Length: 438
Image (tube, rainbow, N blue to C red; front, side, top):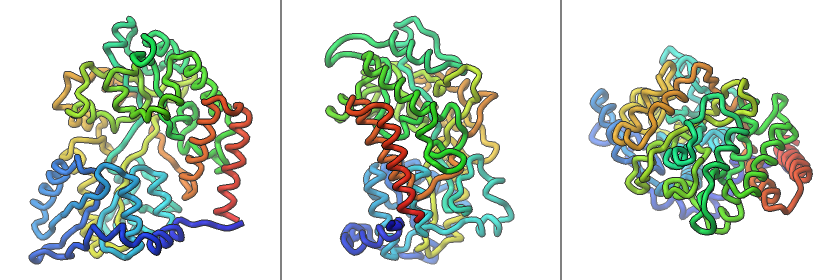
């Protein structure tokens, strides 16, 4: 069977769509004798905070000029497509980004990024000694997760209080979540408030697996697909029951109305949203301006005595193989992912020994009246916290994730049975794996 690789697809994109990279323009590698580090990002709303980090670094390194360039205007998919083409075209860039580990692993496997292990060795340290979550691809370090994202449940505290419910404990279960969703669901029709909301991403269907398995959620320890584990099918059945009961927003409505999970939560249309810490800064964003306090809970467990696994992911920062200043880029990248996280004040640090709550306090400092800090502090300071980051993420995981989203949607819509959904996912996953390995 045909073996597919990401680099072949990128090469085809270069041939078919050369104009996509044309608007970016090549930066000069030096500026008035200074080394220019070209940092390409999609996060246009981070521009001011990014400049604060660059200015702090340049004060220590006056021979360096960090220049940010923004592509995609907050759309990471558009950004990554364009940057992929730019790298394949040989355009010099020094730091590029991916939005999560699967996207990063796919590109690292293609040879798009430099292995950073030699740069850590030259520094006299190691990747593992420097960071908490140490994501490797094929044994190499092709990027650093510098802005961490952890799963949690955002809860509208006004609706929680109205239902007479306490903030969930660190030991709450999926049975508790169901009871909370039922209690906070109210109204009918377009004005109905649902107690729960699960988004359409494939990984939202792995929340049940995240409570029983450390590490990668898509594959078992033998690297075969996870889909025959009871925790996976149990959660699908659980999720469908919530939607059928009318206490969790139906996927049919989410798709038909193109619902945005941020809008739904901040408008008060849903009471609970399992999502991630990347939404913390949104609470203080004038675009949303919620009229209620947001409280939090950890992702529920199946049993109250289960391990407290906390799924970790992050925004990945890499040095592309087209970099003209890899040593300077690495030095800035080390600053960016350590001291720079606190200066930027928008994400949780991945630096070894960093206090998660210190990062959180920096994120929410301007809108503490909108945040239940006690609940957030309890989660971030959980004495039983177990960091759970993917220890295996092959290049084809993104294709399996697409299959996961498609098959789960059919099941939730009532178009196929649970048994058929699991069987089709296993067959599709095995076919995808075979195309890459045979």
